[in-house]
Image (cartoon, rainbow, N blue to C red; front, side, top):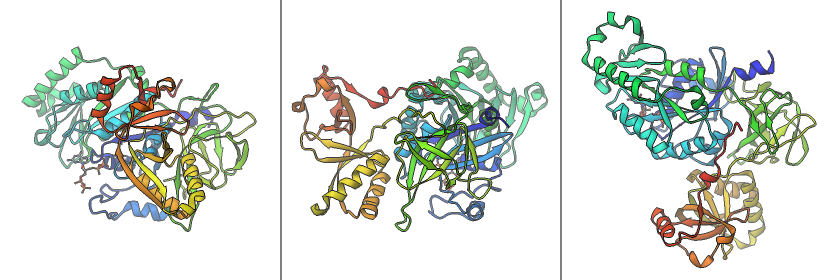
Length: 525
Ligand code: G4P
């Protein structure tokens, strides 16, 4: 098979949601479709903290890999599906954001009983800024939730994206009857614990459902939607301007098959990626890719790390020699992993859209480009994601200042944490987006650099960057802390939203830059 055909088959996406919206349940159903597991209810028992019985464990044993790993890949109806995990609970970190730089589309799960929640907004913003197509699944229709129209309004208002309902629920909770599937022109009947059934709209009059008042009301609602709602546009979907919305229940499961089939149909295959000077097409003959995540081994016996690489062009073959574009060094890619692979976890070949794990002896940094062939280039730098929590950091023992600095320098370079300097005090401040990053940081400083550190929280803050010619240290204090980032750019860590608004009111002449706005970026040129 040629490069182009291989690329076209690939669908690489992430599922984003607020904790408890149903990401794990949905992932599990998709793994069932992909025959990676045989029965549902087996992924993990989160509440008890125990891993459930299972096919999962079986997979772990058979493949000799951990399923807590972050990429799952399987074949589905002629496609190669890659699902990337976006850690969401305590393990929310910059990696969660960076993962979104390695996907071609995103599935956003919203709990119908809760509507849009905080973490969804954060992750959505990153997708929007990169122009990633977003498909929405409104989950838990088997429970009493918000009105479908209210949910669509909320998505449009809060997330500022056009919605197009691909189907429309008939009833909800106890009175949930099914969905009118506009896209496939059929009614999908909810049969409780039994499997859903499909009735083509042309035959609906022969079914009892046609006489149900809830059904009739919904049909009227649908007609209104057809007349007054937005038109479906695949181009707008692919540009990240419109989101197709599906209703269903991941747990039942209901509406999941229709959703996934439509999603697989519409979701884009890997597209071109930007470098400093040009755009590289996925069927460019030389292999290339970039590193979006580095996972350190927390076991002190094993210092090795795994770098996650998204293939962007050409064909990867195990054992090949590549150039690390940043240094010009040649590296042999011998030890590679695919995460839930069809054969013992070792990956022999891969194409654009695939994610492989390469052994990292400490040479890589987040954002590094690896490339085969004579011509080198570097993919655009990964954006810096604004941290939200900040802690001052010191070495417990001042005699260890040298290791302390070395450790911080390396972990910052690797992308594990972000470093800021107080101004003019020059104190060290570590920024993160999730608590886990601090734990990993502390652990690695102890185990890899033999330094105990003291962390002193300065709380959650709102960072805003300043223009160079507008920096006036007299305007800032401990509440609204003036600091420098690693590029020597000034920014202010505002204590809270109130402090930020107060400052804007008082000093309208100072431009405050929100990194999300600066990062506006379309990944496909
Ligand atoms: P997450 O990964 O997004 O955090 O969510 P997860 O799938 O773990 O789902 C969170 C809870 O919501 C789970 O219940 C799960 O069973 C439930 N859930 C998911 N999808 C649906 C749905 O379509 N309908 C209903 N009614 N519930 C759904 P839990 O009680 O917190 O956990 P568990 O003990 O059942 O695992």
